[in-house]
Amino acid sequence: MGEVAISVKDLSFAWSGSSRPILQSCSLEVPRGEFWMLLGANGSGKSTLMRILGGLLTPTSGSYSLDTPVGFVFQNPDHQLVMPTVGADVAFGLVQEKLNWAQTRARVKQALTSVNLKDFERRPIYALSGGQKQRVAIAGAIARSPQVLLLDEPTALLDADTQIDLVSQVQKIVKDRQITALWVTHRLEELDYCDGAFLLKEGKVVAQGDPTSLKQKLY
View 1: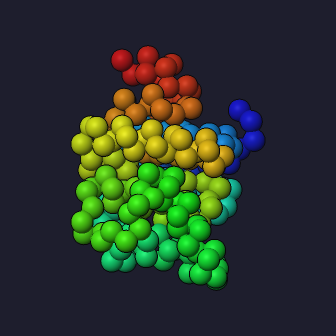
View 2: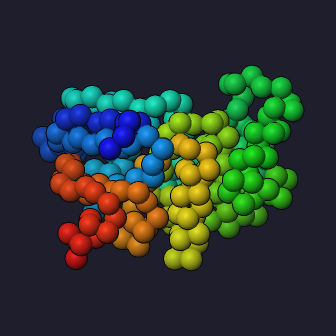
View 3: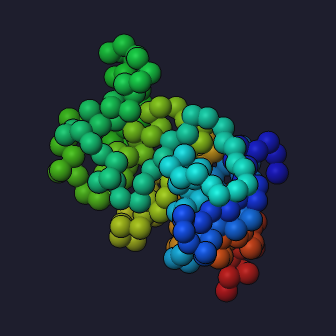
């Protein structure tokens, strides 16, 4: 591995009052500029780990570090999209950067072009399909020029064709923008689009490597 963009060392997490840890001594490293996936059954701790990396939860023990800034994409885009139109929603995340109008407009256009929605700026959010909503959520995340992009099962609510379309688009974004991405999935077919993957089981990384070798271990 080259330089590391995401580092997790002996991370553990349990809800207060619970004797059952969700994560236990979890460790992994994602190389800078690569697209990696986190695979595992329901309850393996994938989403918990992503929420810790996104700053939404505090680990019980262990440490982690990420290149910043970080973009986060939720499983359900309806939990992330807050404005009435596509352009307004992508621009909403840029408010804290105090850009002028021209700079904001340029960022919005670049982000929407990256997800193949360049002509959707004035489209109402309610008029979008599930796949289009997820693309808007990704556009909002990358408009802030993140160094790391975290995606928590972004295809879970999508049909098979839309799912493959989205994962291939993120693969292209990682390459074109030279960012690092960690994508949570339980679908083996999505591994064909990543540089490497981790298998999480009972809160621990039990296997990792290139997609082909990891698939062979699973079959």
